[in-house]
Length: 68
Image (cartoon, rainbow, N blue to C red):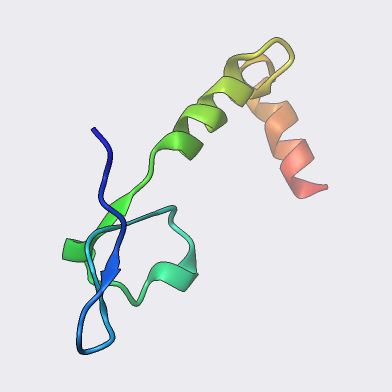
């Protein structure tokens, strides 16, 4: 199912649903007109489970790397 693109309306505002990530630049959009995308969630999990990824590191290793 393809989503229809947002279209301008006479008052200059967009009509439709914005699909975005959690970037702060989108905070001005009403929650009822915004859909959070999930592609980044999949990418994050794939990075964590690949060999040598975050899932293979101990909590102590992740903490030390986070402090550096």
